[in-house]
Image (cartoon, rainbow over all chains, first blue to last red; front, side, top):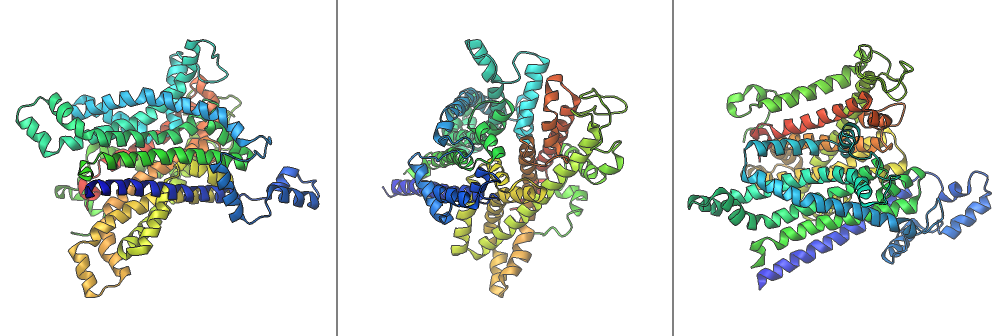
Length: 319
Length: 284
């Protein structure tokens, strides 16, 4: 029993750290946007506003309260789902984000469904035939993909699939989405680009996880007793590499967060990231803060999930 | 363990396991090439990068314009030379700030231990919970984009990772006998950090610096691509891709060459680090 107690203690500790991190992150996001030069009330009312009007608006918006109080007010609002009101078009932020969030989740979901099985297959195959031509080609390709910015992958995919081959439209929206094929075409470019970015990470990590288990004495034993290479990898190494592989999947998916920002912008895809980049150029603070928190929460959840899988899949902690 | 008194000696000491293989050498050659371009680029540029060289736009490669013309008729070759200075310069400045800060804090935390170590580690780990591009976006939204802001932001994004890496290495070295002996001799903390720990983590720290340089180039070009990085009339390679994005449907060289420039730099650094002699990379 003491073993499983340690396990649950570790899990609780990890969740506690995640919550603490989230608190520090929200603090950072709030105060970073507070640094913005210029008085928000003044900007909203324009140069011609009288000092009295500015003071009145400051009071109405609660801007004359100490920043720390406004931080806790903002945090309490977030917890209750009240994201505030956009400065630019006076609409509730929750309403602006709603559909956009669903669009982004769709993009992320489709990408996950496409890239996870492919990456696992390629990663395991590369580990199984380690050192072969196939493995070396995969390794070179993935390291090249990891080394270049996401927008470069996007640019190259457009160049290859839309310009040279002419198979797909370059921009996803504004395109016709009435029929299924048209919809498929509209989603294809963003999904292809994101899948490349995510898969490269996932293939490398899966390969490394499997190779690590192949190097253990019991797998060597399996080889010595005459098991085939396939049996050695699939029957002996893989079951014990499942934990690290699941960890690798969750970690790679956290790269979706950065990738989605670039991909939505370049393909003009109406998701949260595009909304946020636009909000940055119009300096719409409540919108930036909410979008930033959405990204931080998703990123943190995936990283925490990866850690939890690593803890739970370690047999030494289970008994 | 021997200390690396003169890193240049490593290259000639092939028989000691310090040999660079072919891929590593090729990577190093490309890195040196871009380094030289960043320093001497302005001396060889055929046109001033801000000058409109012709009324044509998005032209193909020609004898007068080696990389064609861009969206306004600038000479792309001259602009890629100029971009090298911004991309390499900003990334180098940021990576040195990030790694110097991270390594110093990491070594202090490892040697000091206790509450200082715990609080610093928790705090910096929390910053690792913010996706890097998002961190950049929020910072630029807050204080506006200029080169000093970019350098400081990028350094702040990558300092926690460097801290974590250096601290883990330093904690290992800290438990070794020669450190215990030095401590028993009555050496003070600064001596322990500078003379006992630092020389023994230098190799992996330099490899980590290279990898972090790549990450910084990626985030910097990402920000510039979103229009939030280096501002016109200046341009780094990411900004050059952004400017010429309309040339994409034409397959114009104006967009292809900046892409090649970024990819060649980052892939070379990664290949170089990947093929570093194991004696440098995995000293601990």
